[in-house]
Image 1 (cartoon, rainbow, N blue to C red):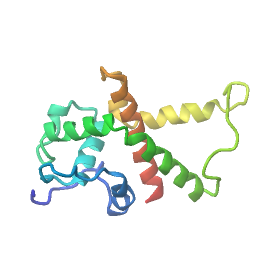
Image 2: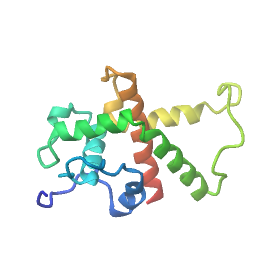
Image 3: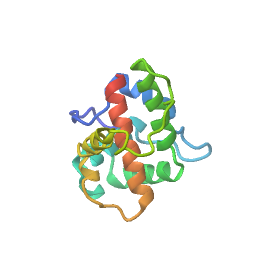
Image 4: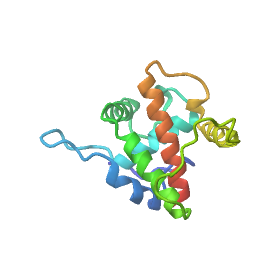
Length: 159
């Protein structure tokens, strides 16, 4: 294990980690034991998302970029981000006094005058520099980063 490092603005708080850690896949049985903490992997992914930097430019006080990318890639392929986002979205709705799932679907935001909801969501994505341009080759990677951005936003609201 590494020595304690100075925290970044993108790091999870203890309360946020308590909410998220149950959703992070456990180490696979029969494999090598983990040498890095899953929390540090998530912190590094949040850093990449917010800073918009290439994987190779991940600061040296995080786990090495190859390890972080391998976890990100595996979790993306296992599609863990979408169910986490769905669950956190429900928690945010319930904490705001709403039903866990919306009862009305908006089919045409222009006619229903809810365009601001869409624009506000795109505004939230602008907080994540990785989403400011189409950096990704694979659409699955872009999709994963969108889910991660919304998970990060939900964690800030929940904890």
